[in-house]
Amino acid sequence: MKISRHITSHITRCTASSAIALSALLMASGASAQSFPDRPIKLVVPFGAGSFPDIVARVVSEKMSAGLSQPVIVENRLGAGGNVGTEVVVKARPDGYTLLLHSVANATSKALYGNLSFDPLKDLKPITQFAGVGNVLVVNPALPANNLAELLELANKRPNGLSYASGGNGTTAHLAVELLRSTTRANFVHVPYTNFGQALTDVMGGQADFVMPNIPPTVANIKAGKLRAIAVTTAVRSPVLPNVPTLAESGVKGYEVQSWNGLAAPAGTPDAIIQRLHYEAVKALKDPDVQRRLAEQGAEVVGSTPAEYDALIRAETAKWTRVIRESGVKLQ
Figure 1 (cartoon, one colour):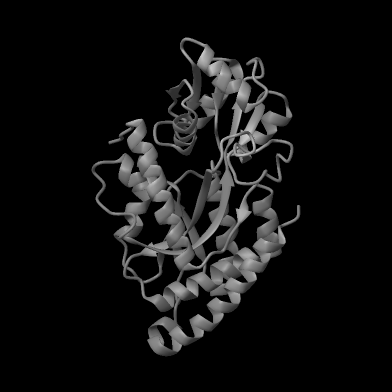
Figure 2 (spheres, rainbow, N blue to C red):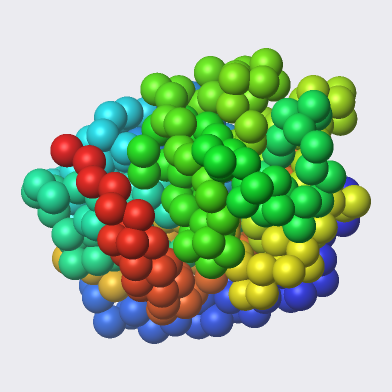
């Protein structure tokens, strides 16, 4: 599977500029930063093994381990929509040895949860975006809707609208549809499940009309005819679903949703260590094997600068805060 030239070129430029910045910072910061790391690094993934964030973390950390000459060990710490694992990192010593597989969940948590013990924007230091993957709107094949226009018309004709499943309140599959609903004013009714697998099963079984999950775990069921794909949420078509239009192409101008993830450290981590981690992360993302393995997941490889990643996080936090407030969802 081909990786687009602009992504590879961007990563190459990031690697070169990071190397220059890293050399300058190491000269200025003394022996402690120069000796980093001298023991294994823990990468906390706040989601389950086999999830998209977990896959990305393991693929990238394997290459980072070689560059750092120390193991980067993935540790899954689940709970509270990613907040349990995030809190572990926020409270860790800011020395570069405890890192977070940061994700879009960190852009929604403050608006969703009223009792967070930390501030995702203030208490974490962005390093780089690893990748992003879109969602796909899929319906039960028996539903008489072959495109978005037909789906919206059907939703507004039915007295009770159309039901959409998700893996729970506040998940990307929930909020992505809420963004679509607020944009189109369609009559959609949310049916939250306790896990994504059951939500998908019930859409295939006809207990719910549609669902908008991440692309990777859905492709096989689409190709098997168990689900009908209506549109993807990314700005451009997915390489693993090239015949499925985007929502923007389908008439919802400006609509874009990605489940992105990246690398972050506790606030207060020295800049020289951030730059060393950034350099090794971007170098790992440039590796052809890493690009191939992530592309097979339908992911777009990024490798941004810390400043670029920070700008993305703040823009996404503002967007999802608005959607969450409009939908009225709150979690404890």
